[in-house]
Length: 330
Image (cartoon, rainbow, N blue to C red):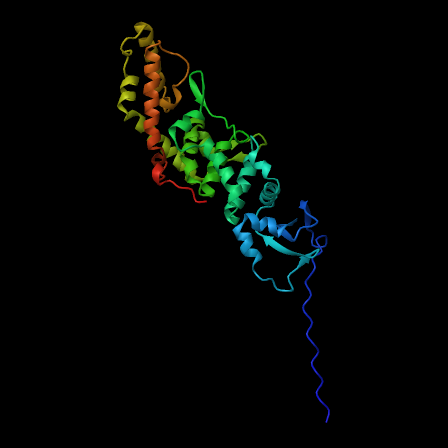
């Protein structure tokens, strides 16, 4: 009696090879010949090292530990992992990952910082994320003393130009948007204040045209926070009695060296603040000597005290939690 023939031994499935040229994919400049994994982001491929990704990211460590079916595609023997991120963000992120000296550059672009913030938060890359967030925090601090140190006084007014991030028209709008989108809430009070101080209502509502011709705008939520916050700040300054009394008074400080001159100058200040509607004079009237050597320091001390008082409550003017409760979500 004949025996049934044995079933043929099943062959292991072959891994599918991906021909990147046939699929219209582009190899990026970040292509290490000894790399062990290929990241596919949109239509771009990056060949990198699992060990490098896993060294810095808990998410990539977990991802590497997931068993891959044998039919998963490969490129040059490397598994292909598809990431649903922006190609430029991944390019900048991998550039920093392989060239950490980028994090110590004196000035960075906000595009670079934003990429590290977004990818660093998503993939838990703390050693890249923390330095760029700290850089933003130095520019937009939570303490009054540090705020004063980042503000430039020029003649009779103040200005702000970033010395940590490449500056351009509309930078502050992009910083607000980045902070809001990535839950960097501790940056918002100072950033909002700078919008209020340095951007008129038309800018807040209509946006700002950048040097490249593109327009940067605030979200409705941020527009609302800035417009209502400005109103609350204006009201709060007049509730600070030493400031209100000094601005409304035409009487110089005790011991004034030039009473007639200072009386006239106080009238000019009153005219600018009350009749011409100068917004937030405690933050603006901080410049060169406009009064005598007795009245001027008295005036500056009153302005600083009013600024400091408003700073203590600054987050609440913009519908944010108080300083003590304001936290970043990293």
